[in-house]
Length: 67
Image 1 (spheres, one colour):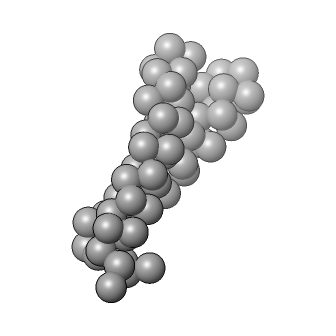
Image 2 (cartoon, rainbow, N blue to C red):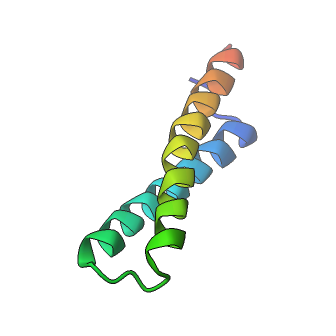
């Protein structure tokens, strides 16, 4: 697979969103999130689909640029 700058940025975005998702789960499981329950759930709800979308887009980009 050929890794391009675009696919690298998408993978990095996917990793950051995954880290934010895991952090949100830990915050919610603690019972008292630092930013409150609402914003933490919003971050979790935004980041989970973002992980999938960015990862899928990165794979598609790398496949399109195969030699």
